[in-house]
Image 1 (tube, rainbow, N blue to C red):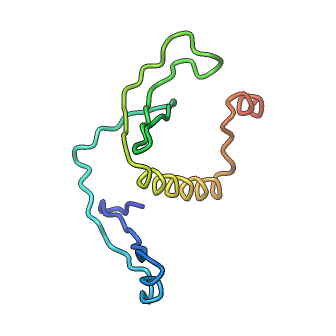
Image 2 (cartoon, helix red, strand yellow):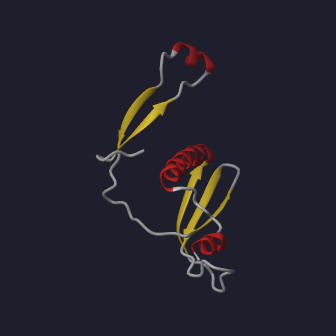
Length: 119
């Protein structure tokens, strides 16, 4: 997770079982991040596709979040990554969501159920 100065801590895993036996403990490395040129956008829609080597994640804005959209959803951002990075991202997202739900409660992903519970 990034800290307040834009760096991120990464735990280095031993490469093999032999390395695990020789390594006394996991090391943490600080990697500096420059996000001064980042472009942020909002998305409430994603589509995932890919090839045997790459994962393609498209992001867009669905103007009709209820029901079936009658217009095409414009895809405005695309991330292409390998499956190793995708697995690390999945782990980081799962940990982040778990912490969020621990503080704020379970996130209901079914829009209809969320509307029903509020009413």
